[in-house]
Length: 112
Picture (cartoon, helix red, strand yellow):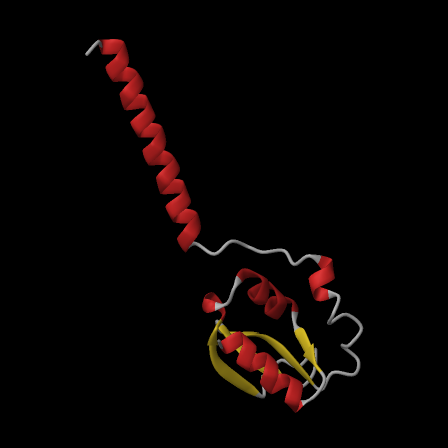
């Protein structure tokens, strides 16, 4: 095998290894997800009438009574790291919840 062919083959193998390493890293590190406005639009305008808010607290999904409350009513066992990117971004932004029935439904969805 000629030297040029060996160099070309080695270059291809190095490029493939680098590409594989980058893709593996991307698959394990959660990326910051921006929520498309149409996804969050279903919650927009409900902040004033919301009884609860879902927001993060120490890496977990927490339930707050008001949008500006500092202390959560309860902290769930749903880890933020385990949520899908869109769900994580929604909770980061704060999900207004009208009543306890909707709260239980949302928590069930996030927990599954």
